[in-house]
Every structure is written in structure tokens, then in C-alpha cells.
Length: 102
Length: 102
Picture 1: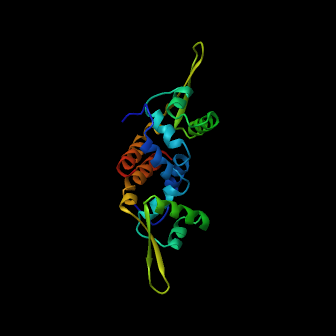
Picture 2: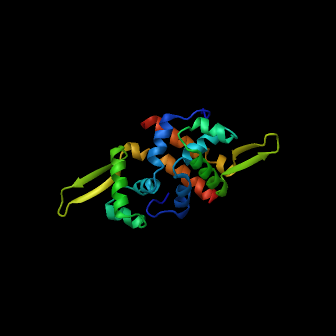
Picture 3: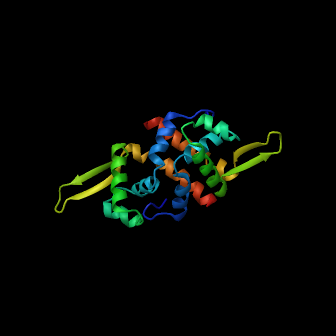
């Protein structure tokens, strides 16, 4: 890899992935589709406002999809798209590094 | 991997790596030791103040070491430690994902 110049694609990737909470949120969703409250249970320190904001951003980036099931009451689940699922390698490399060095 | 609970080590890793500019900075230093001005040349959008702050944080985290060479004028270089070099996998997985999806 050429490290002597910055790669615009890498820069754009970091812009998405490097946001506060995003790395945690993607790890949670790698465990399968989740309702808002399921996510909150795993990351309770994250405020409702912040979680809503991040989910919207990840939807806009094509990383998360919001599924609405017309049941009573309506069930809403958040799920990784194939683009999102493909972040598994990133999450696993961060996990491996953290376990080794932290 | 267990995705049903959050891992404190992963959380701590994300806390370091997920900070604005850090992902770019580590990619630059994977190219070898650099002077302050060399880094600025590769990431010109980053302010001097922010670069100084991030380098200090990465030093404190044991990811970057600051080498001072007693020449005239004094030469100062920033270099990844083994802990920092080990982030190569993380940077490469983000690069691969970004090239595929962005």
C-alpha cells in the first residue's frame, strides 16, 4: 500500500467509521437485527438522541437498513446491509488489536 | 465472537482509534517515521493545534514515540511503536472496505 499520500477513499471511510459510537453500533448489529431498545441494552451509555442520529447517518450511508414490520404494535428493526456486514473484518481487527494491547 | 454484549477492551480501542484524524495519522505513520511538517504535507487540512494534540494523545497511549535527534538544528520525528505498528491490520481492513464500497 502507498502510505506516502492520503487516499480519498480511506479518508471517506474514516469519516464514516471514525464517528463517536459508530464502531460500537456496528459491532452490536453484527450480532443480527436489533430493535432500538435492544441496542440501548447493549450500549446503555448512548443517549436516545445520539442513537437515533447515528442510525440515520448509517442508513444514509447505506450501512444500516430500517425494517418496519406491520404488526400490532408495529415492530421496527435495524439491520446491517451487505455493505455494513462487510465491516466485520474491520470490527474483528480492532477487537484483536484491543485484546492484545489494552 | 460474542456480539450480544459490549467488550470493554473493544470499547477502549474504539475510544482511541475512533477520534477524528487519528485513523489518518496512523496511516501516515505506517509509512515510516515523519517530522511534523512531513505529516502536514500529507494531511494539510489538519491544523497544527489538532496535530499536536493528537500526537500527544497517541504518545500517551503508547502508540507513537517522539524521537529527538540532537543535531543542529534539532530534528524531531514521530514514529509508531510496536503497539502502533500492529494497527496495520486495522488500517488495511478499513482501506479494503473503503475501496470496495465508497
